[in-house]
Every structure is written in structure tokens, then in C-alpha cells.
Length: 289
Image (cartoon, rainbow, N blue to C red):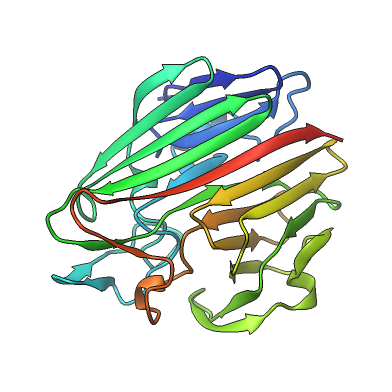
């Protein structure tokens, strides 16, 4: 059964959302030409019911993978089980695998909400705003459980990739990973992964976390005739995923590195008591070139 679609439009772009599918974005495209600004998704992709086949989905109450079958909280061990058929570790939290509700809608703004009890009680909201070709996404989570727990946030957008796609995203270091895609150590940036200046994407697989990010990135698509000027808040890290031979890549604003629950000092995570909140924002400004 095809899920319900929610639409937003401004004078330049058109956004479609599927609240029931993890509060996901289906498509974001230029109104005049239909040019996709996120990876284009057809009815087949929508009918899979999988947020990972769509344009963008929220990551809460953590981003990416967690090792050791869970993590320690002040009141004891929180056990987790694998939640994806494509990964042996718990991944990307629980918000993307639950239906969200539309709580308000105006011509240029939609607010979605999720009340979750998995893996503990929390409330998540996403605010989508579309004005003059600028998509703004604000993700907030409020901890509702009586026992405190660690929280982290992120967004997982998929962008079109051509031979000439170029990226600028200043960072200082990168986490190297083992075969299970868990971080092992911080390293200086290899030349091919240093995006201080605009450059093409690596030809090899990249699936790594980058540190000390200023929140700004520029995605240029000269073959497709546009660029996206992006700015994140509440995010000192980004994850870059460049699969080989596929027509997309991901740059994901996240509040913490992969497996931060088991790294010294829990970098980027927030220990929230009942009623406390954490937030992350991401804006994407479309411009024709």
C-alpha cells in the first residue's frame, strides 16, 4: 500500500515527505525542470517501505553503528539488538523505523512528531521549512524515560552523484575504520579526502566519520546545473559515504562519531535526564549555475 505523501512547495522547489516511513523525505526537486536535488525516488522505491531507499531520513536517538550489543547508562546496561537486515550491528537509532505523525502544516512548513518507547521513551520532532529554494530541517529529541540515557542525532540525505560532482566541507581529522565499519583511530586527512577546497569525490569506497567540521558544505553539480550551499548546527561531525559505481553519495550531519557510546568521553553525545532535549539543524540552499 502506497504511503500518504505530504507536499511543500515554494517558488523554486518541491518537497515530498512520507511521514509513515520514518518521517522521511521522498524527493526534493526543482519545480521548473523536475531536476532532483536529492536522489530521485520513484513509486517502486516508495513502495519498498524502506527509508534507506528514499531521499533523507532522521537518525535518533543515535547515528550509525553501536558495538557490543548496547551501551552503559547511569542506571545500567541498555541492551540493543541488530535492527537492519543489511548490518550485523544496531544502526541509526529507532526513529527511522517508526511512523511519524503530522502535527501541523502550513503552505511552507510541516512539523512531524514521533513518540517512541524504543529503545527508551523519547519524543522526536522534525520541522521542514521551504522558502525561496532553501530547505531547512530541524530535528529535536526530548528524553521522556525516568532513567537518563545517552542521545545523539543526525540526518541521512542521499545526493545525486555524477562524474563531476564536487564537494567542499572543511574538517581536520578522519576516523579510520576496521572491517566491521567501526572506528579504530583518528588520522590526518588523506589528500583525496581533504575537502577544504572544492574537489571531486574519491573513486574508492569511503564510509568514514570526519571531525572538527564547521558545519558548512558546498555541493556543486555542474552537469546538473545547480549547487547546494548547506549549513548544519549542533553537528561537529559529518559522515561521508561514497559507494563505488552508484549514482549517489551521502554527507550526513551528525552530532557524534560512530560508536561514540564506547569511545572515551562519549564525544558528541548528550546524557539527557527526563524532560531534557537536544537538537540538530540542517539547511540546504538551492542555486542554479
